[in-house]
Image 1 (cartoon, one colour):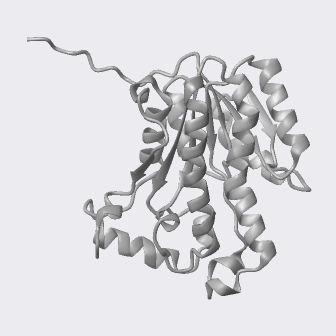
Image 2 (cartoon, rainbow, N blue to C red; image 1 turned 120 degrees about the vertical axis):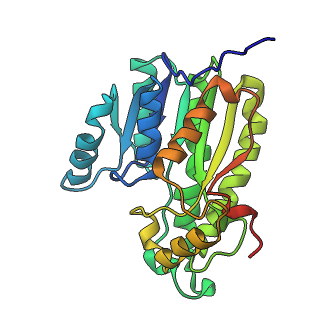
Length: 265
């Protein structure tokens, strides 16, 4: 009888760029921790603010992960995107993993009637939350000559109507279709592109959605596991998708949501 050795996730020697860490409740933070634990060499991006407060806060948070790159990257600023990936090319020479955890919609767009969505609010949400994945993939593509794994974060609101999610649902629907088109283009280069659809988690981003706590309580009552998920659980799934254990998986949306997505009522 053959006993197969269970392969643990090992990302030693892999360079991983993680975007979207805001604080210690960010899903991106959960992912960065698990990639670090698996041995990846991390690069972290941050969004600059006028007083540099955000830069210092995130730097302090990620310090235990010993990132070898810490770079400003506003995805609405072409020069910052170019600078980020030029630095990666100069310092690392290659990129193996890209983690896209970027989304934004104005608070006014995340409650009330969907028909009240403004033209500017719609454009901003789609630009930051969906187009940015295409742009970052274009920049990462030349650095993934040896293949790679790209991951983004989505949510059930891109497939079904979730109260108050509004324009962000449209952005996530676009994002999930981006995943499929990017996977089709980049597959021949051995670059895999997948999304993780997490259940609702109390984060800075989710707090902008009207009624988020009611939503979380509802998931706890209805989901097969009778709970929501943690940042660490999403991080574990991300580490799997970044590893050779998932070498045959691309263009997929993996639900990490305690099973909520399967329920009818």
